[in-house]
Length: 176
Image (cartoon, rainbow, N blue to C red; front, side):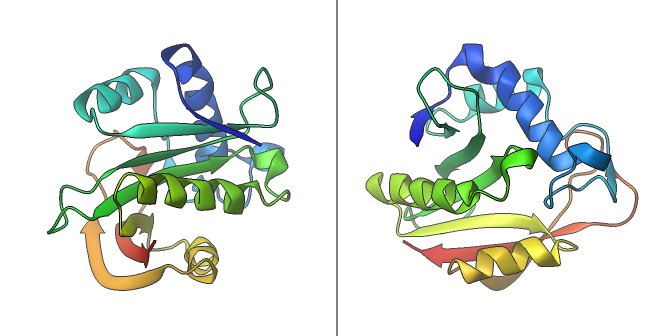
């Protein structure tokens, strides 16, 4: 497996991958889809580009089987400015191509992202997950993450899609 920071020419493929995993339906849906309760895209090219420009310390890691192979996964990492101290990093948008979600690529990408953050000084990794995603929350818990008891509101508007019901995020954390 090859892990590398995403480059700008890869951004359209990242957008397509993330939207297929988070909002895929029918035969295109993986077990991580949010399509049952959020309409619209998860990200678009403009917002991804803006988010990376606004967070110069962030890294968007990609996963491939070969250097010139197709994009299989991605994950966002950045120092967590909302957490006291400077030892926590935020991990988000962990994505694996839906048709490959049975290859344990998600666990490998998560472990690599945690090691990458630790190499940059992280002692803890934090993330937010939509509260309805019990199966995904349990998946993270099996990998050492714990619910902190904190919640955060789901963004109002259509930036991350349009929720069909009231949603919030739960916060999970793991020491690395």
